Amino acid sequence: MIHTGTAKSLIPYLFWLRDSKPTLEDLQKLKDDAAAAITEAEKTQYADALKETPLVKKFTHEPMKLYWGKADVVMDPPEKFHQDSKDQVDNLARQLYPLIEKTEKELILVSPYFVPGKKGVKFFKHLNDRGVQSLVLTNSLASSDVATVFSGYKGYRKDLLDQGVSLYELKPNSPTTTPKKNRVGSSFSSAGLHGKIFVFDRKKVFVGSMNLDPRSATLNSEMGVVVDSPELAEMISTNLIAHLRRDSYQVLLNEKNNLIWKTTDDRGLEHVFSKDPETSWWKRFKASLSAIFIPESWL
Image 1 (tube, rainbow, N blue to C red):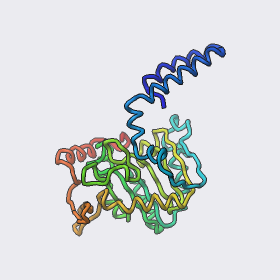
Image 2 (tube, rainbow, N blue to C red):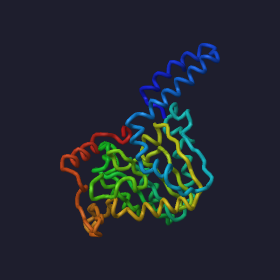
Image 3 (tube, one colour):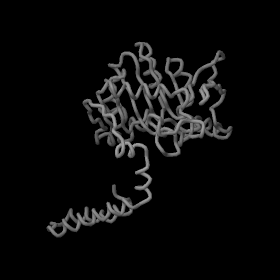
Image 4 (spheres, helix red, strand yellow):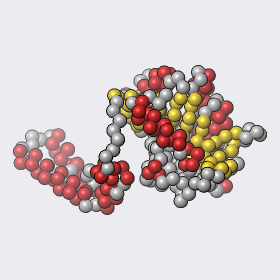
């Protein structure tokens, strides 16, 4: 762990080494500088805060349960950046597609940014027709840190529900919700959801950087790990579903085919909302305006 400011002092070595023949003394100086950088980083406020995170505490002070299984690293190929989307035959999204095609009962998708598009709606219809139950957890308007991306998703909610998708939107951070350290796929930043996790029939799990949106699929360079571990997949799925009604809003359609949001508070009481919960009219207006004027391909 090297502090950003200190790491910059090591960058000149990279360019110097490219055009010269370093001596043993040069190598020792580089090692000394790197060690000094690490020592400096360990004294920063960031390092102190990192030591207090629940995950680090578990690693250093508590025995952690390990899940064993075969893991395959998957990633976008470099040539993706030189190809049109229609020519990308081996990008990360296409590499994961065989896993989805083999899914027989349940597909769980956790994605902070979720812009399915018309193709995505057809994709979920295909799953529904095969008898696969799809569950999607994404950010609500209140928890999203990019309202423009949310605007690309909001118009598809009814279509997704019509195709049998169980749709949930994460609550923003508040004293009445579960601390984010207990949420699958959450982080400690101001935005509620950052993890990207896909679970296939509770047998295999993908964890990586790819969102379910056009930018991740065709523009960004994404990677992740597919783990073949039914025990791990079951743990993630069970933990996620157990807290959905408390940590998120379930999006549903009422008898008039209008969107509603249901949730359960810490006392077990159910609450129903007819508008995006915990948002102002101005935030809802901006999201609606963005949905009209910003193309999905820009998101």
